[in-house]
Amino acid sequence: MRVLQVLDTLKMGGAQKMQVFLAETIIPLGIDLTVLSLKEASHPAIVESLQAAGARVLTIHFPHLFSPRPFLRLVRLLRRERFDLIHAYLTYANILASFAGRLTGIPVLASVRSTGYDERFYSPARIALENFALRHLARRVLANGRAVAEFARQRGVPRAAIDVLVNAVNPAPPLPPEERLALRKTLLGDAKRTLIFSAGRLTHIKGYDVLLRALAPLCYRHPEITLFIAGGGKERPTLERLSRELGIEDRVHLLGVREDVRRLMAAADIYVNASLMEGTPVSVLEAMAAGLPIVGTRVGETPYLLAGGAGLLVPPGEVEALRQALERLIASPEERAALGRTARERVQREYSPETWRENLLAIYARLTPKARPYLEHLRAHRGEG
Image (spheres, rainbow, N blue to C red):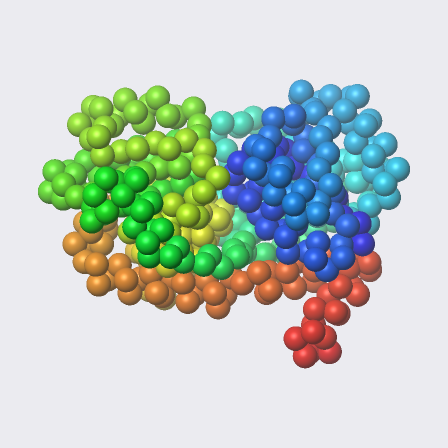
């Protein structure tokens, strides 16, 4: 089976991490995977990881959504390569791949990955065009969570055309104690300090300003705490200025884009996701796999991820609620350990790569018969025939 994955960009982000995860998960089955970026800008680590997994990586640069020459190149690629399936991620990919797939007769699986519109790229015309593609051109729409599926239905996608496949994550081996201690000393100076960690784009919807405001009074009552944030984005100057205004600039470290997020998580004590809007946050799954106690907001799929005592939930945008949850965990190493154990057990049980891969192939099999043998092989391998 030959699959084409189309993404808006191969910059570092949750969708791109899931693309690497997908490549590492399905290529070993013998599936031929090509990954196409619609922008020249990319993060070398993403490209290298995809290539290391065995994927072919291509770029057709679209300077604008309506770019006739790149679109003709895309159509020619589809006709020449004769892919069995196109799987699109993100807005431009959903639109362009759906139109090109309809022109070439290749079934398209589009994707919805959030419960709202990204304010950075908000355009009523673009939203209307994507909604049209989701409703009328894509054969099926993949939502990465139940809340995301509900948002897709609000956009007019028929319920029967939506498949829900929650993100999964590979297990993370713990850092050897001496390596963890050395990393904590490098980051904190004093390894006994409390390391609070968060990861994601530095944008308003990630709620980092809320996190800083919640952290500020805690820094005075708990001088042992330090916050590290991994991620790049346009909000960095704003967050640096806010840290100075709150008087906590020496307790907040913006690390920029990092390729070792999971290693940093293994050295942390508490993970925070303060997002105002989410789909299924890959970073929360990674933190669960690392056995971290998590404070998350009640947005997107996060309440489902942290159900059953796998973390603490607070309303989005509420500084005081977030402050109280953080203070509760800072003051109780025992509760941190218990939440971390529950989180790790939950992610191993319900968000395993094996379950995710089989469910993805079942969705692919609805679009092309070429996927059926791979699905039957997996089911036979685990004894279901």
